[in-house]
Length: 275
Image 1 (tube, rainbow, N blue to C red):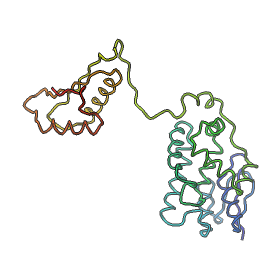
Image 2 (tube, helix red, strand yellow; image 1 turned 180 degrees about the horizontal axis):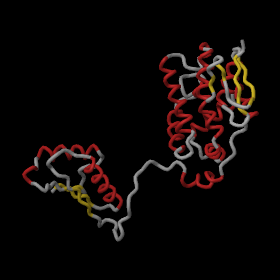
Image 3 (spheres, helix red, strand yellow; image 1 turned 135 degrees about the horizontal axis):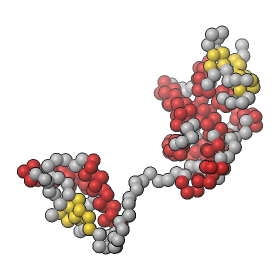
């Protein structure tokens, strides 16, 4: 009996069509057809309509294909990537962060899970292919290297050819193209305000942690901020241990705070004075 996958003409579940192509190429009794909706019937009472549900069900029907992973761990990874594809990657608001994450994972890999094609690859490709924002990045060479390599590699596979021919990539987004050159993939870094009137070599900043406890988040932020301005203006960072209640001061805390500051990369150099 042939398992039939119906794919909507208007809003196609591309991963569903792809899983049909891949399985058919492997010799399994599967075929997909264009229709009015995305649909795979499990029986007379149960049917699947979402891409993620369709590919999961179909892949489970043919376990020897290993499209749903070779073991429990791979299946868990695949589930993660399906959730990622139709969640973070498909979101038009913060898709840059999602693409950067995907690019990092793909750096040493050809396929997203294991060493062979899985339904996770099919679902990720669906989103990359159908997103106008992502297609704009790919077309303008602004997409991260590994994501572009991954998308082009999958697109070139024989099983993908009928889908690419039937469903062209999404139209490019003019809005994203306009801003891609200056705002896409900004470095993950903090923002610092200017110091009006500051002169190179004359800036002196002071970091006064209370020596009555360990270095906390507030101290760490203050220390890094002071170091930034010290380095930016080639000035001095004066470190002074004082507390509103001198009775609480303790030499042990001073030692621990100095060690913690060193871990943050703030070294006791000539410009760092301990008073």
